[in-house]
Amino acid sequence: MSMKFDIQPASNPTPEKDRVAKLVDPGFGRVFTDHMAVVRYNQAKGGWYEAKVEARANFQIDPAGAVLHYAQEIFEGLKAYKRDDGGVNLFRPDANARRFKDSADRMAMAQLPEDVFIEAVEQVVRIDRAWMPGGEGSLYLRPFMIASETFLGVKPSSEYIFAVIASPVGSYFKGGPAPVSIWVSENYTRAAVGGTGAVKCGGNYAASLRAQAEAIQHGCDQVVFLDAVERRYIEELGGMNVFFVFDDGSLSTPPLGTILPGITRDSIIALARDAGKTVREEPYSLEQWRKDAASGKLKEAFACGTAAVISPIGKVRSVSGDFEISGGAAGPVAMGLRKQLVDIQYGRTNDPHNWIRKVF
Image: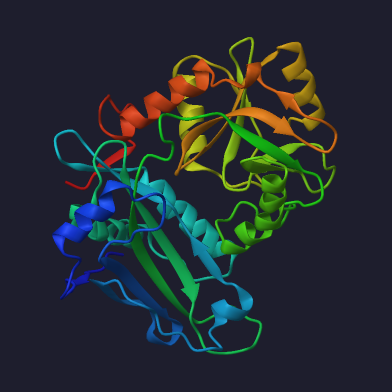
């Protein structure tokens, strides 16, 4: 299914001088571009209709709008990267479109055709290309969908709004990736088998905030969750997947099921295997992590996601004691994979898996 987007440029876009000033240090997710893409869904009207690119503006939602009461809401995160030749790359948008569809399915929401998702993302990049920062900056794209039917009954909504907004972001780390410290949450869990852990829905993030606040109280940057059944096995961070690197050169990462099937995670597995490394997707306990860090069997641990790409993990803190990994420094495997991935994203090296989609 393809849809024709009706393009309605903003009548009063941000003046160039103001835009340039905002792009000097945009931070993360605080500055927004002039436009958004919106597609609506109505069961009675036969599905998806009215695809538009228009000036970024507030939505009008009735106080009984379904999203406000029953949290039918999903989102994605991906980036557009400026190449040295001035063109713009998207990285694996088809994977985001597929995951968005899977999320909608799990949340009993209308499924958006993958080509409409990609087209909406590309249209926003095209109309707001002047907002692309240079250097290690990128344009962060946030496709999302909310239930918009007005009713107070517990059932799937029959109306939805899908939209894409964009936010220019600087390099996630000033002066290169510094190792992060993480707090092991032993009171709170993120997801159970059969739950929504593999879905990119707002509720998962809301459920992680209390644990993240606890991490900050303990002087840590991030929280890591254990499995909900045995409270032993490492699952993922509040918003990132996690990898472990061993002295024999192999890597391990928690298996899918209750965690988000990260696109960065999937890309790292592919690149590590390309380089001849063994990558295992298997449970790894906190107890084993502590033991392997102490014996030196574990050489590195790192988190990964769209925003930060790869963050080395230097220190782990928990109620049962703290430990460091390789003296708390960033390791060569994490940094090597990060460089390789970023070089593919910016078009500086060859793309063996055809992950790049050139917008122009």
